[in-house]
Amino acid sequence: MGAQLRVYKRRIRAVTATKKITKAMEMIAASRIVKAQRKVAASMPYATELTRAVTAVATGSNTKHALTTEVEAPVRAAVLLITSDRGLAGGYSSNAIKQSERLIERLRAEGKEVDSYIVGRKGVAYYGFRERKVADSWTGFTDSPAYADAKRVAAPLIEAIQTETAEGGVDELHIVYTEFVSMMTQNAVDGRMLPLSLDQAQDEDGAKGEILPLFEFEPSAEDVLDALLPRYVESRIYNALLQSAASEHAARRRAMKSATDNAGDLIKSLSRLANAARQAEITQEISEIVGGASAMADATAGSDK
Image 1 (cartoon, rainbow, N blue to C red):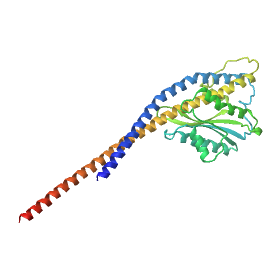
Image 2 (image 1 turned 30 degrees about the horizontal axis):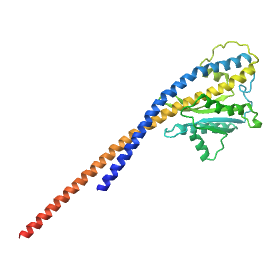
Image 3 (image 1 turned 180 degrees about the vertical axis):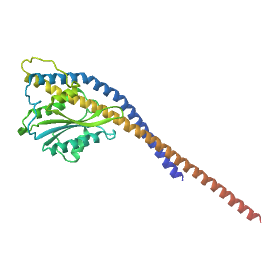
Image 4 (image 1 turned 90 degrees about the horizontal axis):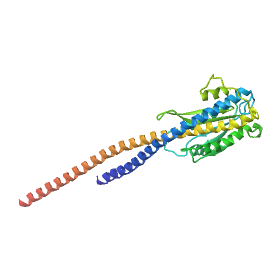
């Protein structure tokens, strides 16, 4: 019985140590959510005005540009998947991966080949374990992305869509990330970044149906689009990285809170078992003492006779 009590006490100490770790991780994740939300809010004005500028150029000039013109029969698409570098975030990465799998199945059903671009070690590990080909990947910044990281990710994607399909380029560019709705709700979503639809751009800008100002372009509208559209892709990717980072911290906070609560419940359960074992041990010791005293009394009575 004493050995069983020691086992319970050892498990209680181990769970208590784990609870301290999960509680600390919960508090760290909660503090990082606020910073990530501020970054998302700070990035919105630039992205909004950039979208308005691209829309104004595309509608005001009627210029056919490679990044705004639909391909008649697209045969290849690129999918950018954003996951996390670290685990312990519940179903955050797995939900994004499932969303990308559904998107890839839909694109293949349309007869398109798919090139995969991955952000985050979880996505890279998923593709590596299944021995799937990855066009490019990036890791090490998912919990706190900077604009420079978005530029690094955007560069090969922009190059791919500007390259002829016969030479290894793509006709469409899609992105899969986790949208931050609230502290309790984060949704894995996908969307097409390029070719840019004007209706899509106005929806993102929140100016659907608004009359845009007329501009004169120097040296030409096409050159302006050449400069603006890469910035548009970078801003979209940066916003997706920031929303994914906020979603990752929120998911980790929720997962660590659940783990902390479960550890507390387990400690209570083990404490009850340890108390029961201790009571059983005390009862057994008392029974042995009483039995020994009774045996001695019987032996003494027999000798007196």
